[in-house]
Length: 161
Image 1 (cartoon, helix red, strand yellow):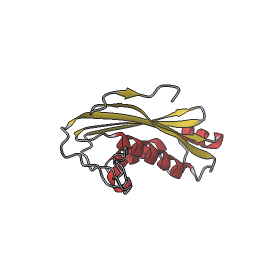
Image 2 (cartoon, rainbow, N blue to C red):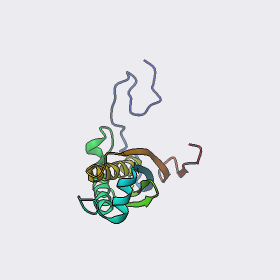
Image 3 (spheres, rainbow, N blue to C red):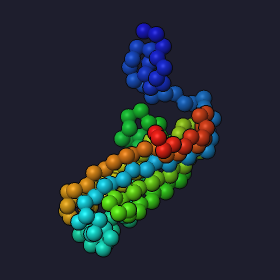
Image 4 (cartoon, helix red, strand yellow):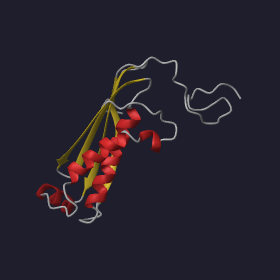
C-alpha cells in the first residue's frame, strides 16, 4: 500500500495514535457549540426552574467541564493532554438550550476534541435531566466554532460551513 494522507492510519490502513513527541508545546484554544432543541413543556420548566431533578444548567455545566478531563478515555486515538482551562456556558433560547465550551492548554496537540466532548456531555446531561418532564428534545449541531494555536494556526467557522 502507498502512504496514507490520514495521520491516524498507517500505510497498511490500520489505526494508530499519532506520535506528537517531537512537537513543541504551544498555547492552544478551541471553542465548540451545540444545542438541545426542546419542547415547550421542557422550556417552560427550564424558565420556571421547576425541573424535578434540579438546576439543569448548573449540573450540565459541571458535567461538561468534567468531561473535558476524560476525553482520551472516550475517544480512542485522542492524546492525554493537560486541560488548563475549561469554560462551559449554557443559556436558554426560545426553543432550545444553547451550549458553548472553550478549552485551553499549553501542550503538544490541540483541544478540539475536549471542547466537543464538553458540549456533547453537557447536552446529554440536559437531556437526562429533562426527560422526566417530556421526551421532546433533540441534541443538534455539535461543531467546532473556533480554534487557535499549533501548526495550523487560527480558524473560525464561517456561517456557510
